[in-house]
Structures are given as C-alpha cells and as structure tokens.
Image (cartoon, rainbow, N blue to C red; front, side, top):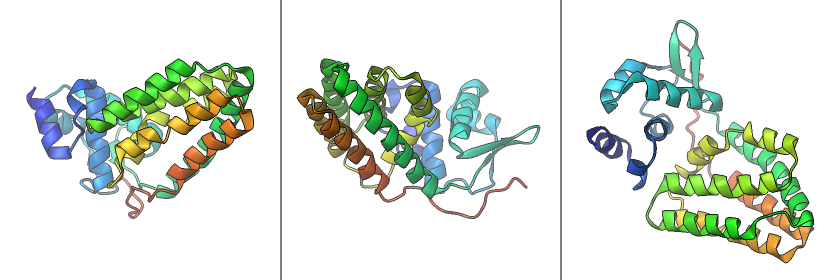
Length: 233
C-alpha cells in the first residue's frame, strides 16, 4: 500500500506498522513528527493536507488527532483548527507516578485474591518479546497495555480501572517507546518479574515489583522536546 510505505519511510515507523489499523498508523506517524520536531509548537495541523500526504481520507486523520488531543500533544480550537501544543516532559513523568500507585494497589488486591490469569499474563509477555525481537513497536505497546490491563481488571475495582484507563495508557506507552535508544527486548523482559511475583502469591512483593516497574519508566530520559508555549496564531 503506497500510503503505508510513505509513512514508514518518512517517519521511521516500526516493522509492524503495516499490520496496524490506519488510525493507529497515522497516530504513530504524527507522534514521531511531533516528538521529533517536524512540527513546531503552535503549528496548525491541517486534516486535508495530512490526508493527502498519506493518501487517505480525512476521517482516520481526524480520529488520530482526537486521540492525540486527549494526551495534550495537540489542542483543538473550535472553528480554528488543531494545533501542536507545548510538549511537557514532566507531565509524562507524573503519569508514571500516578500509574505506579494504581498498579501497585491493583496488583496487591489481585494477588491476595489469586485472581490473575497467569497463563494470560505469560502469553502477553511472550508475545511482547516476539514483537520486540521483530522491532515491532506497536506490537510491544499492544501487548504491554493488554498485560497491565489484565492485572487492573483482575483487582475487580471499577474505580481503580476507570482512573487507570483515563490516563490514555496506550498513547502514553507509545510516546515512551519512541524514545531513542530504548531496547524493546529489555522492555518486554521487564514484565516477567511481575508475573513471577504474582505467581509466588506474596501480595506485598508483587505490589512492590509492579511499582518498581513503573518507577523505572519514570526515571527514563524524557523523549519530549521542551519548546516554547505553543499558541495558535
């Protein structure tokens, strides 16, 4: 597909790029451009122009921009359009702080109850590693999100799960994994200690390991450029 090849060559998307939905491919391409400085803060993102560039309709572009807006990477102004916002690295760190607390508690609850499906968790880790070995960033994201969502759901606490989901986990995980120099296989393997700790039945150990997993991501170099405040002209 010509549009896919153009996106892959222009924006350095992962090997699994072609296997993901169009909306997802566009979102990843736009993420790479925003984080890589292709667009300036305050620059307007014109749906029609982007659609023409990628050889698609405006619908998938609009969906991708809407998802990016939920993360604060772009801002939509009624009747004026969508603009690149200021990209605040500290905000991403704060997400991992909150996420760590949520996942620590959910892991503690789920382990005490023996509620986690260990086969499912191990399967997600194995699929994550397979994707990492192929350089499939989106595959790593998908299986990482599925892994952590399974633990959150196993706690059977709707408030915990709803707050966790409100953090835009998939898109923010994608942002993190676009950091230059990250070893995707190491990222995938970092989930194995969580499975092992949950399998041990020691709820406090499992909770600590889950929190430390998010703490590690919080300490990563922030992949976002800190530019001037993006304002619509």
